[in-house]
Amino acid sequence: DAGVIQSPRHEVTEMGQEVTLRCKPISGHDYLFWYRQTMMRGLELLIYFNNNVPIDDSGMPEDRFSAKMPNASFSTLKIQPSEPRDSAVYFCASSLVPTRSPYEQYFGPGTRLTVT
Amino acid sequence: DAKTTQPPSMDCAEGRAANLPCNHSTISGNEYVYWYRQIHSQGPQYIIHGLKNNETNEMASLIITEDRKSSTLILPHATLRDTAVYYCIVTYTDKLIFGTGTRLQVFP
Image 1 (cartoon, each protein chain N blue to C red):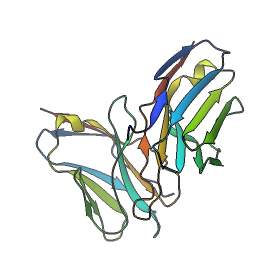
Image 2 (cartoon, one colour; image 1 turned 120 degrees about the vertical axis):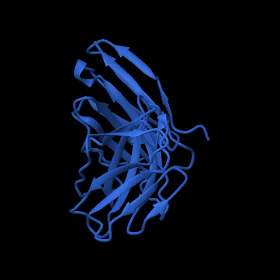
Image 3 (cartoon, one colour; image 1 turned 60 degrees about the horizontal axis):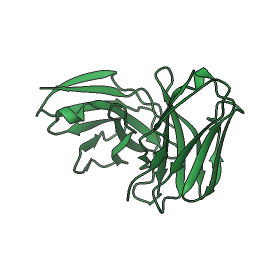
């Protein structure tokens, strides 16, 4: 398997513009997670899905952020409008929850977002 | 989830064992101990996990004290490629809460 795929790898945009980040989880995985990493706040969980249904979005910073998972092989994280403080690396991760290793997540390479 | 405490940084000579400690004194009976690492600019990578018993895989060993209040991740023969931030996470839920971790620097 190719692992978790994220696109784009780098995104530079101007304040106020809409940004859409994309993630393709590992085939067969039923959990999908979105994280954000900054120097100041570290690695934060934003939202996660189970079988395409959002389970916990308590980490989503504000209404400007939204996430969808229309099917088992695709998810998006959208920021509208974007602000400079949204600049960060956004990671997507997926997992399959077997009994023995329930919390083993596989992370994608991340999308580095810069908002000017 | 139980809170974990890790030293902010450690050094290790290449070829020597790296022993990374983690304190989780408030751990509850159903919580697992997980270790992940993050090499610069990459996504975190799962290393190993345990509940009560010591565990070993091709990457590392995990030693959990009998009272489960602390654990040690052991990289038996550290290489330069093991330079990374290592996160100790204690959880029983679907969520992984990453702390600040230990920055391990392996030097030649």
